[in-house]
Length: 251
Image (cartoon, rainbow, N blue to C red; front, side, top):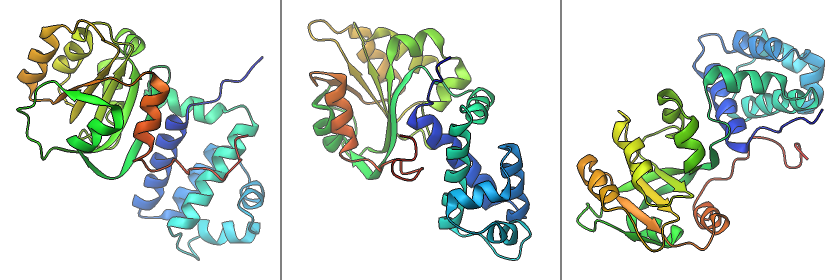
């Protein structure tokens, strides 16, 4: 039986959730132990993957040492690599528990720094459909989704996952025919993205899509990129790489 590898964005979200739980815990050592035990990994296994001795992991878990950002990053990476070797059982379990929309998202990243509308237009080869929007608008990340899968399969709570760490991001709907359905989905969502980009329509865009964007005060951009790959490449140029795992760790 083949094993489906979770998407990079799924791994990144879960890794951040684990790291955040450790950082925010009043007892970081206990939090380290909790997550190690959840993943069913021994101190020796985690230590070997991190390139340290088991006694070092033990010291952190017992509170003899306070974990810094670098140690937590390596610790979480070790857990994920160990889970990969066991068929992604815990990552898949966490994906279901957190309600992450694993099938609809094509790419999801944060920008190195906030992007202006002008920069976003350049990245997606886009046209601003309502130029009366405030030109000083900023977004901090992007999510590219398959519009058909997103509209057909996402629940209201899963739609929140598209917003990542902040609603001030660009949601890019691909495979759009007329533009109405994505904007209806945005319209009924209580949390709005910072900017909506639609990719697909070439000849006829539903005027209602623009009107719905105006009603919500959400800037709407039409991307003229030739393909989804070109769209992804343009946005990744401004993004932070998802260096959650060691290079080559996932094959």
